[in-house]
Length: 370
Figure (cartoon, rainbow, N blue to C red):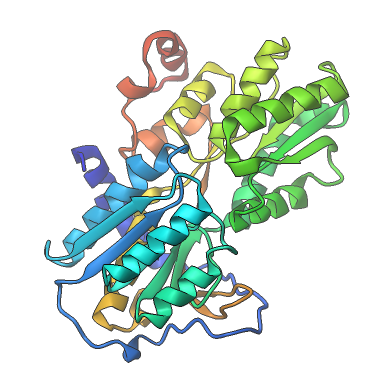
């Protein structure tokens, strides 16, 4: 983990423990199985399994993994061992990886599910083997013991509000395209819900897509189809649920000769921040990964040691198969060219030099990014 990321972790970690957002669901099914008193008390020499969903999005390997691993090491005086794997967007592979974690007898598993529903049986198998499961970033089905993520409905609202602000009087003069995330990701449904709550009745949605596997190339194909169906002069803006897809969308817009229309995003990827500086993408949602990683590590270590989560997780969420799961939800920020200095640069995610390379330098200078 590099020095900048360590600084970001130290600066932001404390905020995770202070977040208090209500997010209770309506499920009536099995309890989460979060009673940590069932676990025997252990020392720092715990074994933690970490399973992340894909490597198409830059955040998982660049931020989530090193931050989680660093926090676990700090919380256990360097004595914990961490078994890591990435499913590369393959739900079947991830199920096999859970089996491997069970075979390796990890004490606790941090799991970011490729497919939140498909992973349910694997979660049950882990719990049956005496392994507590922390759902990370996505609310996996099954008897999970803890959960941390961002306020995902608020993410969608933040995107929708930014798009409306960017459109201004043009909101009623044409149509927008909505490019949602994958149907296998419960977060995508929440992003969509939040966006629709803001956009419905205020814009005309000409085309809307659920993008398979969140892949930029699929978003690109969908955008090409939308341009063909609606006509390039009719599209005034695009709701994109994340930055990777925004890149594919903007490529399609440029190829069709469409420029200057607002496109949203999420994750504050470096390429997206550069597109924002250049005026190609209007905004992204900045999600500070350090407090989310801190929360996952804190809950995982507590569960592995048989400690009470009450001092760590102040919220409760519910899924179709688990209710009142101890949770930590982290707030988000709308990232535009006006607050790059105060967000990703201030928090040490990127330096101005990393953002303002080559063709972006003049735009950075104009925007006062330093």
